[in-house]
Image 1: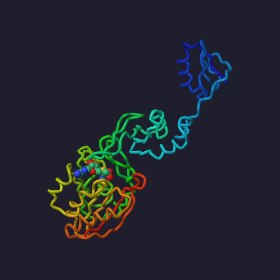
Image 2: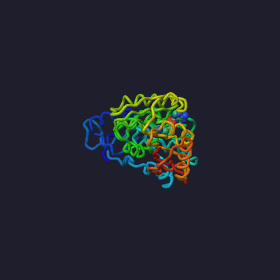
Image 3: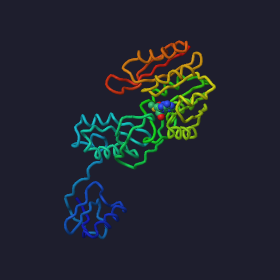
Image 4: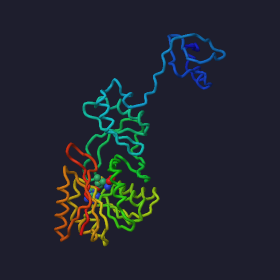
Length: 332
Ligand SMILES: C[S@@+](CC[C@H](N)C(=O)[O-])C[C@H]1O[C@@H](n2cnc3c(N)ncnc32)[C@H](O)[C@@H]1O
């Protein structure tokens, strides 16, 4: 390999000059002995001593995640990690199993290179508490947990450390949005940063009332209302739906209840606030639909109403045998 030979002291300056003039061969590594440095070149640049040396080729930049982690993890471990990726805007959240704890930095750096996003975080807890937020540990990139996620043409700004958001519900949100008709009055009882209200109001001329107990979530929803061009309108309330709803004078054509662990404890409010023939989009964690249907029926019979089940579906798997299920119910 043709090289420029320079005393070690001049190595860095010469490297920069040759690189800037486009004469350095970037496919090989520079070699250094105790006195001289050898810089690979394609031609014979003027004013330098040229010698022939064996230089090591540069490693190809690996393109995929497996290649980046080859030799560090088994292919099964790599595949499990890959399916745990949640991409929210320019942030990636990973689930790293306990037995790979000592490799978390290598995994985080590989995920950063592979995804080319701004930041990589790892899950440090389950989703917990009233606000349904999880602990995250920063791994790689820039530690900035605010991002803008794009979904069905909507821009959703959020802080992944402060609010609940799951990109895995995108299909469900689209499905609900498509079933909404112009003119509906809608209540989202647990709106978070507003993905249901924003996606719906972007596409439909509706009036939405959106409530959440997490003030950070409502702060971002208010920003999201400004960030998006909406056909419909959204009015936001911060507080516990049980208290906030006491001031509602209106009844609603549709009520969205996406708090799957506890939504059933708020069904009494929903069945009171729903219009005749209105629809409740009800969610819960379960291994079947029967439990949710029974809960809807019980809440309705308490107030002399009836339920017609329009649709049921599995939104996503939560643990083996358990699902985040959706039930669309017409209340009469
Ligand atoms: C599972 S998240 C869903 C958020 C949003 N609907 C979404 O799909 O991204 C549930 C939300 O309910 C809110 N929440 C919990 N208890 C509440 C209550 N009693 N009243 C109002 N909001 C509540 C939490 O702060 C959280 O943002």
